[in-house]
Image 1 (spheres, rainbow, N blue to C red):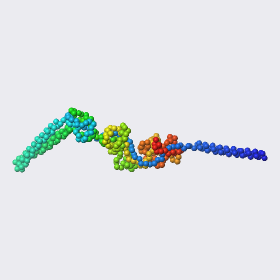
Image 2 (tube, rainbow, N blue to C red; image 1 turned 90 degrees about the vertical axis):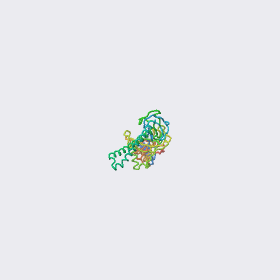
Image 3 (cartoon, helix red, strand yellow; image 1 turned 60 degrees about the vertical axis):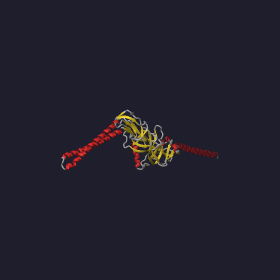
Length: 389
């Protein structure tokens, strides 16, 4: 009886040990499985939504005078007067210089006298021809004599016309002795003073007048970029410039401040620079205070319409392959998916993306360095402002 009880105890102990062993083995397998399963990496995500974005492109440029005229004499002579203050504003037609007129007054008098002499000759020739008119009918004078009288009258008329032209030329030269402003604007320094001898059509200018209000700003843009924009406008992908009025704002390089007045784009050049591959765009700006001076370096922000159904993606979320193609990571069902994107241009700290992503995509903006395609992630939404930092 004791042996039976002893055997039963041994058997129960053996069953207990086996059960414990099985539980320990299962627990070990579960621990190994937990260790083998990858942990989800926490990442910051931003939910994308389409929006209409204004296309604003910053371009380098320089200011150019709206009008500029170099003042040069058109007759020879000594400068008698200078009738302006250097650096002042002058009106079109205002007298600037007076050149000695004595020689030209004498030429006018001589031309007037010559015209009077030729008119007297014409009057005599006309009277002679009229006397011959009835005589030729009765053949009292020869045909040759009458023809000579007619020719003499015609020559006298031509001489009168030539004398009248000489008088007009003399008067024009006399008027040229008064040098006036061809345009309104700021006049610079005078390179000649009273008493200086000047000659007609000399290479040296007397002074320069520059019109500053309004003023031109020439900016440059990639020729290929401009072509793409024109095509997008034509097929309707870019809207907002149907009326042809393209606004331009300005930043002054020397101060970094924005110019208070808004300009409009006037035209684009008809050829691309062979060296730089850029094309010139010209805008016109009001300049009532004379803040802008010709030759200043500026940056023009050209509003080239608006792009609908576009996405603003933080620049730090966009990566590039060695071939230059751009891509982003998005979280889909807890996994990382890579998507190629099409970038139009930069907008502050964002890239303007026109293709490659969809509405509702969970764009990964933080933790990109710790993940790759197919990796398990735990999306954690971040604010838009923080995503751009």
